[in-house]
Image (tube, rainbow, N blue to C red; front, top):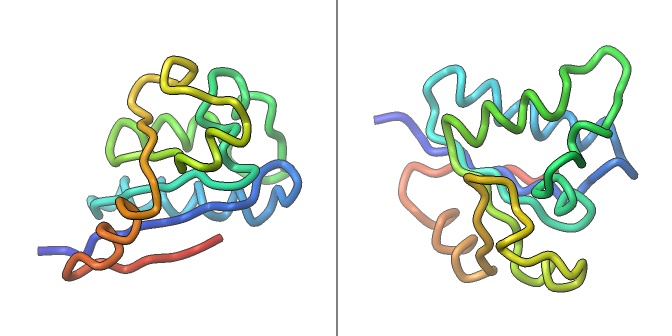
Length: 120
């Protein structure tokens, strides 16, 4: 059984390289058959909404919307509860396949056996 990868991304367009790295690692893991859970927190929270990843641009990087869609299709994407509330985002605003959950759920995921957690 392969390890599960949980990635927490806190950076958004404000730190484009770090944000892109998190999505790239997550999408690469999905393509490699590794179970992936991507948590959107801080400024990355906006990428749970339609059209936001499509606005993101970073030279020489894969399109963030394409990476996001690959992760949603093959893994799990979760938006932090507090981060959503601070931005007035509710579950009806989200792209299909993205859920909202809190710190207890994140902690439960990263404490599972055979789980590797990364924070960007």
